[in-house]
Length: 150
Image (cartoon, rainbow, N blue to C red):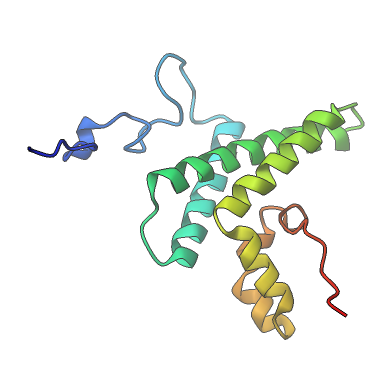
């Protein structure tokens, strides 16, 4: 029995989302030049780079999906932060729920472990090694309380 190929051999045969030429699936026109689209692309690229560097291997489709979700939640939280800092009321339940979901998405990709290791390190050298983790909300990532095993 011949195996069927799950991914197209030619990257041009995949969806625009899979091959990186579109931010979202078809059906909705998205101007990739807007501030929000640029922010999403920046965060997504930084998360992918950090994940690839720390995992030491290729980015799997499941990890890529989680990184895409994390980038989207980060941009949505950025909008809520902007509104709150401007003095506008925000939906605190939405903010908290999105923050928690972002934390879980980043944890699923291993970012919480990196932050914990950086905190346990000695001096600034160890923190510098993992400084990228803090750029995505280090306080959000490390929500587990430190355990006192006395």
